[in-house]
Length: 108
Image (cartoon, rainbow, N blue to C red; front, side, top):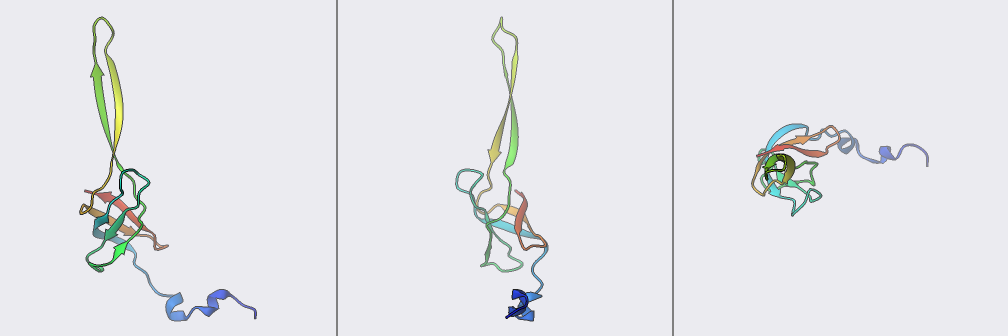
């Protein structure tokens, strides 16, 4: 047998149109305790029972500045960052890309 393996897939499945674009969603399963955890979302305008994921996502970074002063030493300024993770139920902007990957671009 010769040819392309894609020929074995029926045309109705091979050329289907997937979801694309940006959608309102909410976090159904949040990452546990670190940035390597999986994030899953529900897009209610597509289906209120279907979870999409795991999604590509990034934590929100918050910068903190601390000033330490102990005379006679000079004043010291320290910058620190904190990674904030989304929580279950948080609203989010869900994006389906042209390869059907699911991204969470922003969450509140």
